[in-house]
Amino acid sequence: MTTFYDVPADLLNPALADRLSDIDGISRPQWADYVKTGIHRERPPSQENWWELRCAAILRKVGREGPIGVNSLAQAYGGKKDNGSNPHTPAMGSRHIIRTALQQLGDAGLIEMKETRTVQSVDGDQKLYAGRAITSEGQKVLNEVAHSVRGKAEEAYPGLAKY
Image 1: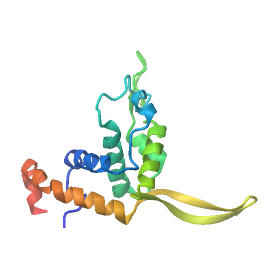
Image 2 (image 1 turned 90 degrees about the horizontal axis):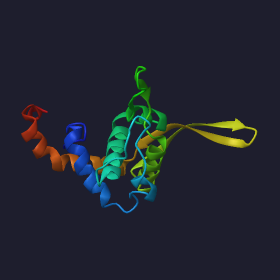
Image 3 (image 1 turned 45 degrees about the vertical axis):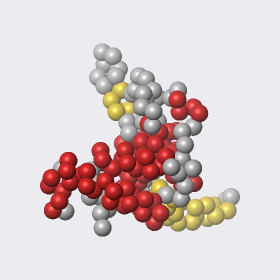
C-alpha cells in the first residue's frame, strides 16, 4: 500500500487540498482574503485555494514530524525578512493562520493534541501537551490521496517505481 511518505509533496499537496475542500469543517475564514502569510511577505496570497493548500501542507507536516507545535510550524513556513540596506533576518510565518488551520483540522478529526502528562498546580490538575499529532482518520486520508497520486508520481519521477 502506498503511504504519503512515498509521494513527493509537490504532487501530494494539491490533490490533498482538493480532498480537504470537500470536508465541511475546513473552509477559508473571512479575514483570510486580506492577510499576509508572514511578516516577510509584501502581499497576500494570490491563489484562490491557498487556504486549502496550506491546510494540506500542515496536515502532511504534522503526519511526518508530529507531534509538532505551532511555533515549529511557523518557523517552517517563515522566510527572510527584507530589512532594506541591512542584512536579511529570519522571519516566522503567521501563527494565527497556522493555529486556525490546526483548529479546523482538529475539528475535522484529522489531528489531535498529544498529551504528555498531568501536573498538579494551585488551580488544580493541568494537562501538558507535546503538540499536535495525526489521528488514524488523518493517516487514512493522507494514504488514500497518496495512493491516488502514485501513478502521476511514477511518471514524473521514474526512480520511484522501485520503492
